[in-house]
Image (cartoon, rainbow, N blue to C red):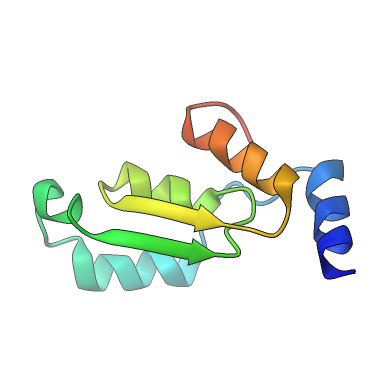
Length: 87
């Protein structure tokens, strides 16, 4: 039942295209002092990634990112967004 709910949500409309503010703040305080080379060696898994706003932000900052979600539509949209498409 939960999968149907999330699939309905993600297949019908767009989602937030901006990353979570708390995530940006946390990453800034703890990781932005690292070089992009060192950031590239840090792997981040987001469980419940939705349409990929946080993954997009983290990948643009040089981190190696992975995401999983229960909604196939969300994953499809996240892949498109990470490849440079629109959300």
